[in-house]
Length: 242
Image 1 (tube, one colour):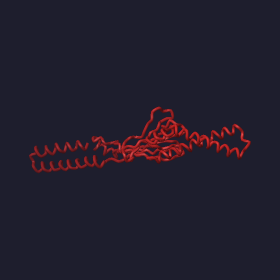
Image 2: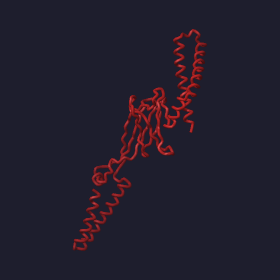
Image 3: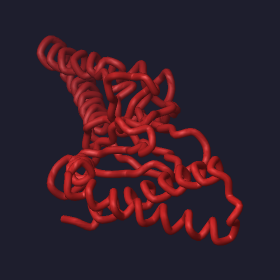
Image 4: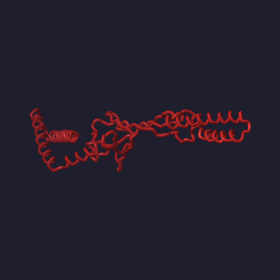
């Protein structure tokens, strides 16, 4: 409506100045329309530049997420940096355990992300900020500008369990390359064998009557422990590398 008011003020100022023969009345009404034009112009600029008549409204949504890692034993949150300064990141995840396609946070400079650890569900809490008209009067006057429900920014708080590993896409590729190398696998095979033997010998020293079933259970447990430790060490190595 403010735009229509501005146009009407321009038209009426012309009409009053040109067609009114009473010069005093003509000058007064023309001056009044010029004032209306000035006020309308200032309000239009303030609405567009300073968001006059608008206020920020936030909406929050929560979504359960699942690891995009192919390994169920090693859940990961993988991110890709945008730009060279690593100021903005895109985080990759799945929306369900069986989803074939991955999803990611918005790749916008207006999107920020924070990763926090939790003992609850792995989830993303997204808070989006929009500009809305403060009331119906402001919408009436500035509605034609179409700047109501204007997207401003969003923030994702990503809650992950402690067993999740956060790596960049480059680090994830490097981890996969190192873990699948024949040299690493051969080294880990011999180291795992030595670790398991040490654990079994220590357990049998404490309990010489240990049954075959108990030994097999211990071997399985020691194997899992060593693999977890070896993977964490490899992850640490990848994170420290440039």
